[in-house]
Image (cartoon, rainbow, N blue to C red; front, side, top):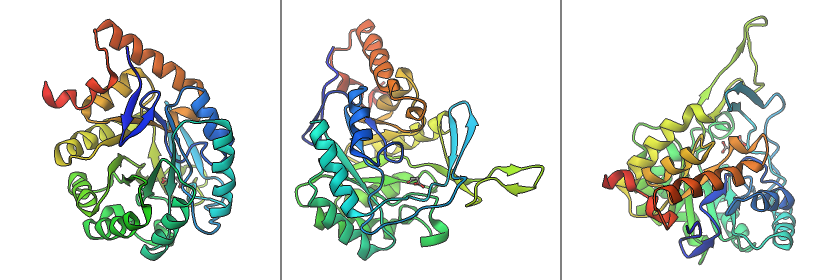
Length: 306
Ligand code: SIN
């Protein structure tokens, strides 16, 4: 069966993508994900200038593959991205997706322009991180107006590079936000970022464990929310979707595609080892072959047709 796929004209060996946030800071870690079986790799969100993120503890393992993180989008700035993207290109010819972050509209435009010069295969606009609200206010992805405004600004700077907009599940109506992004010029939607923010308290000290107090929830616990979001977005827009949220095995990836995803992001499940990509790929292949499915793209949106 055929796992190769095309997404906005980009050829991928398979639909699995290393999601932004896990392992994507160095070219070597991005290339390692591809070597292990990912069809493309997404960088950690790139900032124009150095952004420090939060102090430890920033990640809590909740068990069952679930994480609560408040990493706070640390990044070394555009020069670091330039070096690491070059390193990636030396190691891999797979598609490189560049996630970008910024603190305000103007900076998003400047960052997009600078990152476009690095020629990633796709730009992913991270307007949905729930961990930087205390620094920058409510994420733009929580407002139709802000989403439209930032997408319009960034799209102008992307040139021929396709633009995916990463949405937040922490909204009343994610389909409306996706529609706003599409109207403003987005070429794809990535859904979803982490859920929350949530909090875990140490009952002995009676203090929140994360230094930031709150953080975004990821892992299998959020998968049904992500699947529902992808389902609703698929019904609402014509642009393709990168479905991300709690996918940990072949069955989960197939479910995400049937809900409407063309590509499937793997984040938290990669924290314990990149072998997960090869494992998921094999499970998808086996399942498809046993059901006579010849082309992986047949799965996209299947649940809407049944
Ligand atoms: C982080 O660095 O805080 C996680 C990335 C994200 O949630 O967008």
